[in-house]
Image 1 (cartoon, one colour):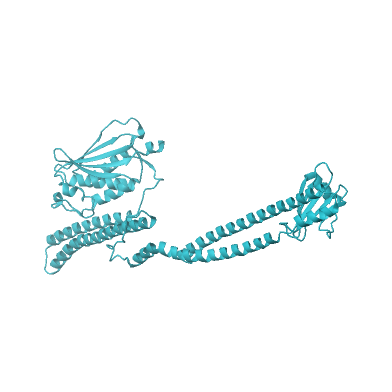
Image 2 (image 1 turned 30 degrees about the horizontal axis):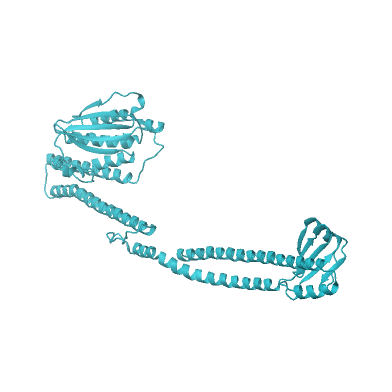
Amino acid sequence: MNLKLRFALLFTFFVAVILLISSVTIYFLYYNYRESDFYERVKNEGVQYYNTTSQNTNRSDIASKILTSILHNSTVYDERVVIIDGNGKIINKIPDTLHFAADQALIDKIKLQKEYYWYDDNNYQYVGLAVFNTGNAVIAAGFDKPGFRKLSNLKLILFFVFVGGLILTAFVSFFFVRQAFMPLTKLSLQMKKTTFQNLTQRIKVTDTKDEINEIARNFNGMLERLDGAFDFQKSFVYHASHELRTPLATMLSQTESALGKKMTEGEYETLLISLKEEQQEMIELTNSLLLLSQYDNMGYIQDWPYLRIDEIVYDTVSHAKRMLPNLIVDIMFGSIPENDDDYIIRGNETLLKSAFTNLIKNAYIYSIDQKVNITLESDGYAIFVHFDNTGTQLPNDEKDKIMTPFFRGGNALKTKGYGLGLSIVNRFISIHKGTVTYTPISNDINRFTVTLDNAAEKNKA
């Protein structure tokens, strides 16, 4: 069952319930009104009969007045009235042919309640009235033939109203749901047509603030993100292929050259050293690509262990000095820690060391004195790690691109590399919900700042 049919049936069902409740309510309200109104008329006929008989003692007068004024002018169909004494003996009755016998239990109920109402098996309504200070009782009865006929007609009318309303509601609901779902139908058709080849197409959005337009806007936003992701993927694959092709082409060229001529032992050694360097570059590039792909979908994990950022920095510097023997590193604290928790974070030690290693290596390669200054600061809520070097600063048009894979600034044209180091740093720090920023400051100093949340302060909050 599709969604449109389900909504139409659900809407029709709710309207049917409302119509049914309304019809039943109207029927029972009229039923109660008819009953109480007829009881009141029967009671009035009984009181009128009693008043007339009590004012006349001559039988002929009673016959002429009561039978004429009550029977012929009565509003009660098949009216029956009797007047009985305390023992149930009939004093007067109308019509004369009426046979009525009252038991003592009925008389007691009338005397106790003063006004007693009941039905018999033939739907005749009875009213028993106790006459004040006389011990007598008046019992009047009648059959509400017009009232029952109206009740039957009302039942028939309500039935046809219910059925007609249900049919009309079903028709209107199907039409309404079809119109209401028209934008969703168009959206569905657009989704079917959308492929990676036409991600630039967008769904039309109006100024109306409703859920359909909100879905369309979100869908267009999703297409924009997908389009950007595909563009990034294409660019990434293109640059990766280009970077891999260069050392492979160089190695192939050197190998073919060696095979085409006789070489001395020294020339072979030189060739092998050159091939080794190219192979090391390929291994470095491959490892960088693997790092990016391995952690591309990784997110922040709440159960990461607590780490001291200063200890990670010291370990990273020790490792970097073994890789770069000429490296000079100065580690400083921008502010004296008030307690041991000022430099506590939650994180993955391997990823953080890899990020810091790339930042140190980047600062070392592009410095003019092979020196890197690292400064640690904390404001109690965040931890800042600054990596400073002295060298050529990036122009403004390159600042926003340095975290893009394979991008290399103008200061890196004479240096070997692939432009992946800062991309790896940015990804690994983002996984920790941190940021990496580049700031050129005075005296040709380049500063990269890593900002991370203080885990100890976060837990207190």
